[in-house]
Image 1 (cartoon, rainbow, N blue to C red):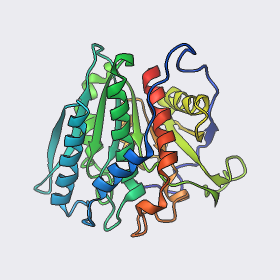
Image 2: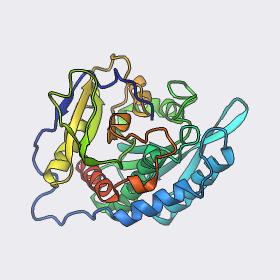
Image 3: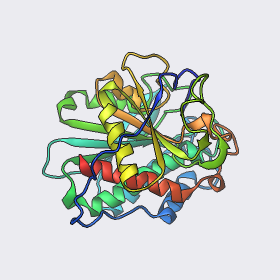
Image 4: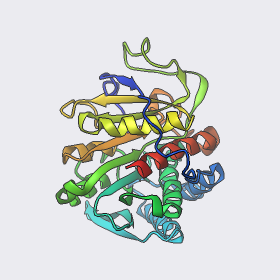
Length: 313
């Protein structure tokens, strides 16, 4: 994940309270398991090899493990391969198909910055997508859309903000499907929470928004503002983590700090769900970004909100 200090200046909006996603008489969907999230993160992080762009072998290990884990849920995957500087890299594209032509996309990048272990950035996001897939596969009969789960390569520098990003490659590949894509949810750093921490913001925002570091943020543009509202509403209805919204005009600069922006470039409705990254996590892009620093219980709440938002689609 790459965040600039200007990137949040357009404002966070508190989530709106909407009607419950499911009638009282309907049984509630299954919920996320913190222990599952921990196991997924351990598998993604491996035994200490850095999954950066220089270590293609490790990237391939992670992508192969993801594909196999998704297969165990009954969700088939394929690699979306492409070359950068004569080296082959690959996204993992997994499809939970229903009878509906319309689809929702849930994604996260699996590479890391330089020699960071990348627990929060972004093993947490990958684990969140996998656990979301597990639950939705079991709740398939409730789905009103098909769901694609995408795991991206090359999100981090030196490829961030370039057409070599895995998410750019994927966004371009689905441009002609725009009419069928109802929403895209990108999970980017969802594991770091500290109610005693003083949350950081760009100048001027700290007087308006939470002073603590114990909320999840939904980042969208004007086209995707309803997705941010639906997600924060699901969190509110489930009595999960506090949820805050950031809404940016589609033409705004300095909002290209993760994979969601590449979908905006192709006119697709996408949001990022995040713990705010470097504005909160002091271990961002460092060798201290470790599993022990994360809260799997709160990550599970983030996933529960996403499951409800997708099922409501």
